[in-house]
Amino acid sequence: MKIAVLGGAGYIGSHTVKELVGRGYEVAVIDNLQTGFIEAVHDGAEFIKGDIRDKEFLRSALIGAGFDAVIHFAACSLVGESVTNPMKYYNNNVGGAISLIEVMIEAGIDKIVFSSTAATYGEPERVPILEDDRTCPTNPYGETKLAMEKMFRWAGEAHGMRFVSLRYFNACGADESGDFGEAHNPESHLVPIILQVPNGKREAISIFGDDYDTKDGTCVRDYIHVTDLADAHTLAVEYLQKGGKSDIFNLGNGVGFTVREVIESARRVTGHAIPEVISPRRPGDPAKLIASSEKARRVLGWNPKHADLDEIVGSAWKWHKSHPEGYKK
Ligand code: UFG
Image: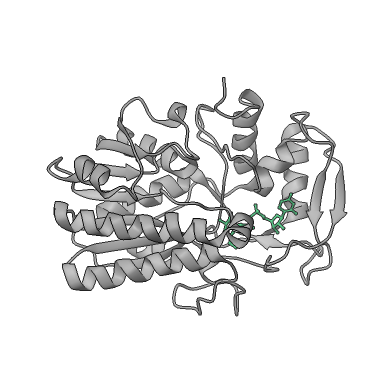
C-alpha cells in the first residue's frame, strides 16, 4: 500500500511515518515545513515540500502517483493561538481540508485517516467521554476540527470516500530511539514545559489553577504515548483498506492524571526537584478530560502499550535531554 502522509514532518506525523515504514508501507511525506522539521522526516520516506491549500501543488503530488490512502496531520493545533487568531485556523485547517478533498476526488483516492481532537467535545458532560457524546467546542481549534470531520462525512456520502477520524486526547512522549520527539515553537504543552526545568531553560513550572473539583485541585487529562497514536493510525488505514466504514474513534488510555501527578512523575524520572508555582486558571481549560477508547480497541484492535505515566514522561525526557533545542542543530 502506498500512503501520502500530510504533515509527516510534525510531531505525531513523524512517529506515524516511522511506524508505517517499519511495517513495509511505501510512504511519501507532504509538508510545508511551517511547523514541521525536515530532520523529522524519516529516511525511508519520500519527501515532497508544499502547502496543501495550493491545489496545483497538491494535484502534482497526488494525481497519478498511485496512492491508496492519505493520512492527514497537516493543520494548526494550538488552542490559545486559535482564540487570538481564529482565521488562521479556518484558513489552514478548514481551507486545507477543502483543497485536499477536492484533489483526492480528482486523484481517485478514496480513503483518509485524519487527526481530530478531544477539543471537539468542549466541556464534557461526563467522563470517560464516548464518541457520540455532545460536541460543543470551546475554541476555534476544536471548531475547525469538527468542521473537518463533517466535511469528510458529507464528501464521503457524495463521492464514495471513506474516512477515519481519530480524536486524540493528550499526546506526549517520544520515540524509543530518542531520534524523534515533540518540538513546538512556542511550546504550550504540559510535559515538554515541565521538562524545560530540568533542562535548565525554565526556573519553575506554573500550575494553571489548583482550585478545580478534582482530587488535588489541578486539571485531569488522559495522557497517551505518541507511539501508541502512531500504531492507531496504521491500524486505521488498514481498517479502511479492508473495507471498514467511515467512523470516529477516541484515542486515550482511559485513565486521568492531574497536573501535579505529571509533575511528580517528571521529578521521579529526571531526579530534579522541579519547583512549582500556582498561577491563575488558563481560560477554556476543562477540569477533566478522559477518553473511553473502548471503540478503538474493539473495532480497530488497538491496544496501547505505553500507558505507564513514568514510561511516557521518561521517553519524552530521553528526547528533550538529548535535543534541548528540538530539531535545531
Ligand atoms: N498546564 C499547566 N501549566 C503549563 C501548561 C499546561 O498547568 O505550563 C496544564 C493545563 O492547564 C492543562 C494540562 O496542563 O490542565 C494539560 O495542558 P496541555 O496544554 O498540555 O494540553 P491540553 O489538555 O490543554 O490540550 C490537549 C491537546 C490539544 C487539545 C486539547 C483538548 O494538546 O490539542 O487537549 O482540550 F485541543
